[in-house]
Structures are given as C-alpha cells and as structure tokens.
Image (cartoon, rainbow, N blue to C red):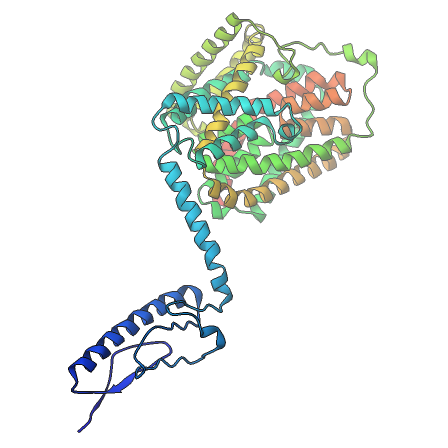
Length: 493
C-alpha cells in the first residue's frame, strides 16, 4: 500500500511532496535533490532579508521534483544558478558593496602605512604639509581656504591614503609640546593696558561683538543641539564660540583643554572656514561705502613692528631673539603646567589656559621686554601651528569628517549670522559707527590678522593698531570664557 510523506523543505515559494518508493537509487537521488533545494532556500532567505527580493533560482533538478514559485515571470528565466533581481533595493547593492570594499581598502592602507615605522618620515611629511599650507596662501584657492585648513586637508589625505599612520608618537609630541609652546609665542604682544588706552570705542564694539557671539552660540545650539556628535557636541560648540571671539589659537586651545577628538577638530575647522569665507565677503561688501582716512590720519597712531601681524611681512628678528622667544615660551609652559595641577586652578581646564594667563600677565607687566620678542614669537608660532594642523588632519578620518561637517556647518552659519545681526543692530542703537562695528566683528571672527588686513585694504590707517590690539585681547580672553560657558551651560544641552 502506497504511503505519502512531506519532505522537510521549508521554502518561501515551494512545497514539495513525492511518494515513497522502495528503489534505493531513486531514494538516494531524491535525498540529494532535497539537500540542494534546502541550500537554495537558505540562500534565498538570506538575500531576501537584505534586498527583499522576489527571488527564483533555477537549478538542475529531477523532472519529478518541480519547483513552483508563486510569481513566475519572464525575468525569472535566468541561466542556471543565477538570481534574477527585480527589486530597486537590489540595484543599490553593488554601490554598497563598492563602499564596503573601499572602506576595507582604506583600513588596510592605514594598517600598513607607506612610511612604515620611520619616525623621521612622519616628521618630514608633517613639516612638509605645514609648509605647503603656508605656500598655498600665495594662491587664490589657498587664500580662500586658509593655510591651516590646507595643512589639515593634506594631513587628512596622507593618513587616509595610507602614507601616514593614523596614530604615531610624533602626533603625541606635537600635541603635548609643540602646541603649548606656540600659545605663549603668539601672545607676547598681549598688553592689556595698551588695549584699554589705545583702542578707544573699538574695544567696546569688540565686547559687543563677543557678547553677540555668545548669544549666537546659544541660538545655534538650541536649533542644532549637535547631540549626534555625542560628548564632542557641546565641546565643539564651545570651541567654535572661542574661534569667533578670539581666533584659531583659541579654537585649538579649547579643543585641547576639553579633549575633543582629532577628527571632530578637523571637521569643525573645515566647516567653519567655509562659513568664514562667506562672512568676510559679506563684511567687505557692507564696508563698501565707508571712505578711507585722510593722509594726515595715517600718522595719528604709531605702528610698531611688535603690533603688526607676521603676514604683513614687516616683522624681522634676529637668531638671538628667536632663541630667546623659544626659551621664554618654554619657561611659561613649565609654570603654567605646574599651576594647572593646583586644585584651585583646575577649573580653567588644563595647562594651555594657565599658560595663557601667565603670558598675558608678563606681557602686561613687562610690555617693552616681552613685546620686543613678539615678531620672533609670532613667526615661530605660525610654523608650529601649521605642524599642529597637519597633525590634526593625519589623526582624523575622512568618513567621520564628511558625516559630521554638515551639522557643524549649520551650527557655525547660524552662530555667525546671529553675531553679525546683533553686532550691527545693537551697535547702531548704541551710537557706534559702522566702521568700528565691522572692524570689531572682523577681529572677533578672524582675529587680529584679518582685522589688520581689512583696515589696510580699506585705507583705515588710524584704526590699524587698535584693530590688532582688540584682536589680541580676544586671543587673551576667549579661551577662559568659552571653557566656562561650555562647562556651565553647553554641557546641559
């Protein structure tokens, strides 16, 4: 008497039954065919999970074991062992596969960098990237991007293409020693008494711009909380606030004090530089109708070499001045590092803020002695900072920068928009001239160098030294203010 049984094959589109037989050869053939179909069923289930495919696989099978799909179409007449794909999601599968392959290749390159274990090669590439950033400022594109951003992008490319390692002892040396050494070198001319006595109403306009930056930071953080960036979100808000009160040195100092990741620092720098390029274009457009000073006004404020930024090319120094500046900066770093370990000063956030306080105090108490080293200090600091920016790029990840830069771009755009609107609006109500407001805003966002460049380009010679001094005042104060606001308020967002 013939009996029937259901063979245990669970398939999305087929249920297979056949009568039991006594023929051993036929039974063996059936078992092999069932095993083959089971393998196809597992493969179809895996593929349908990721592509939602309506999959039909043809294979060589006995004629008495038909596979009956629920929806047989002409697209299912594929050659043996080839799946016919009709889902749109499947069309994107090759792109995802390519992305995975590229990511894997980049990881392999980073795991075995071209320089190998040669520390000298790492230093050579870092110094070359820093020099390339400075050279790029002689070109139109380099001026638009800025030297620090170019050095960062070069370091980022070298690391992610497998030339430089993602982590190296040289990077630790730059972060631990060269960066702190550069901060006092930039602040030898930070004489606070001179700021108060020679800047006049421009200093008050600068304070208004700083308050507008703080307000813009709160507004931007309210609309773009940066929660997707994790713990680095509020840290980047504080760093960008310091960037738009003082300058790049404050951005670096706050990022280092708050222990922000290198990839985040690179992403913030890239996003902010694009916004700043648009900002400077707008500021110059708003200043188009303001006339230059009369020739007699050019002599109303003496211009000293210590006050001029190194970009002006007027600051020269001897080898003795350069070595003295380095020695003094190292001594300030030693004192600041020791002070940062005191319980009462830990609230400042680390060694760099304490070093900033020490050098500002020295520059104010001994303006002639310390100020005479300013040209040498600024030139040496620019070199060290360029190496640092190259290191930031080399420590970063392209994928991370690309995914985080848009949110930081939006944050920085709103922050600067609110800053400029409040500065011009309230400044007009308080009786400030548009010239002073635009110069003060420029000193806030770009620092003393861009403010001096604007004063020179517009022929405002009487405002040249005051613009530089208020920019230096921003260098001296933005780090402390941003760390305090970040820890006290931004951290709660």
